[in-house]
Length: 317
Image: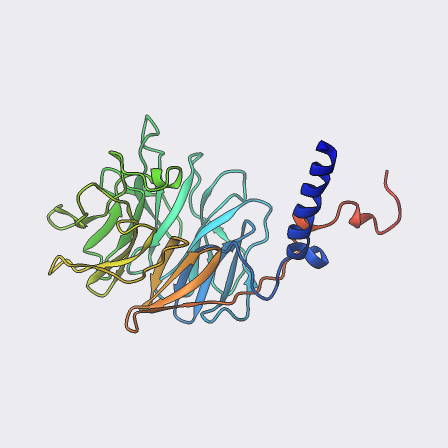
């Protein structure tokens, strides 16, 4: 009886999985599992299968940007859209790299053995903002650093510790989350290290927190557009997009998803791109609506090749 049940389970799994990998590949017309998207002008960049890809803002004309066996992640466009900074494992360690948005050979900018994760460009595009624990002797906190795009020694910012961060358009302020994100492990986490967003002013070193409801919540992915800060929050259940007006102090909910959360979001040129349910969406604050992108990625993914296929019928050793 146990053998019959086992066989039924196996056949059920095969019937579900086989269509996903038909023809030894994925759905090249509408691919899922697209991560950490970025947007600038008429283009988007994203991570898929450990590599970086670019496409038009409508999801068409997908191009592979990296192909190394290591993981390349967290793409960020420069203010002029000509460059993409990212974190790469080209030499066995995760460091900051920069590459032309049109493709080419990446340039390495950091060399420390600690992990360096890209977060933003400075508003003038002269340097890349990243986080690292290189100066934290307990390795408990991440701190903010900038490194020139032309190369040079990184400079640590005066903010004590941070995890996510974004410059204001004029460079006079920074929106950041001071701690990591425990909600990645514990859904609806409400403990003492719940994620919050602080607005730091470089001139007088003052800090203002984005208001949160009683009982805490998790605010993350701060983004500046104009004079408002846009961010993701689970204050109303699943993670959705919100905006904060520093002048009025008003927080406004922009999306109302109840099934799948928004996992990561990035802003550029008046648009927000985010990941949800493995797909990418473009949100237009002016229209107040989000549109799902159809992004088809055709790639020679090693993990979906059939075993022994490379032998081409010649046998194996």
